[in-house]
Image 1 (cartoon, helix red, strand yellow):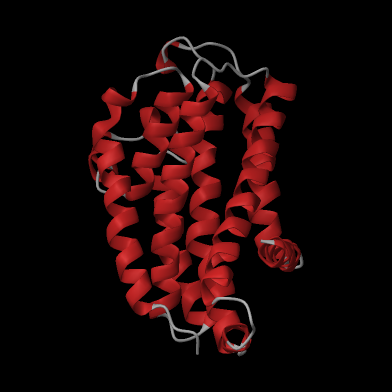
Image 2 (image 1 turned 30 degrees about the vertical axis):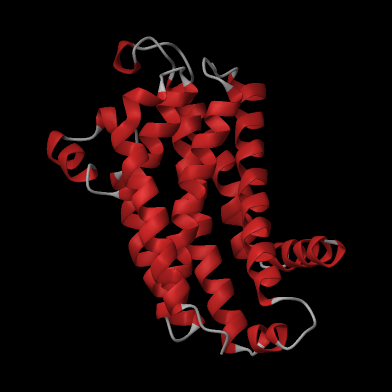
Length: 247
């Protein structure tokens, strides 16, 4: 257990040494929140059911952080570690190979949570955002969405032969999702055709689930989102396990 905790700490420090990954995981969403908050404010509007723009933006931006870590940070780091021989050396250490995988997942999860906490803190201190849900329920939804996208991220890392290709695949998949799912721009203001397409984008289901739970909706109102994310976790996890390579 001590070795696992030390490995998690090392993984987190290595992650923080990557300026691009650190910026997009921890600082990007709060900065964009401040930018759009300065433009639109947080006055209640009928478009969002009497809630302010920042009220609905904060839970949506949680999806923005998840896709950034899951589809960009994780695949690039994993593919780079394999490419440079780090994974091969990990496999020869006395630690069980599973210890590396667990520490890797937990370190990414903790970094994602750090980014989300900073986002929520910014929203609360600057815009006094509303929260009407249950903290444990929101946390459960966050964990479901995050682990589902991590599974897909490991699949990308397993299929990509190099870190550069992993970066390309991750960005090609992530950036359209950000703008078509409601993570960056609220779905309510997008054209009807875009909203129809968004139903087939996995990130849309994270955004809808997080917004619903954030404002106190029951899980029973989000069975579609739960089913899609659980499917991504199970199928993506199985395929990622089959494609994962140490060297």
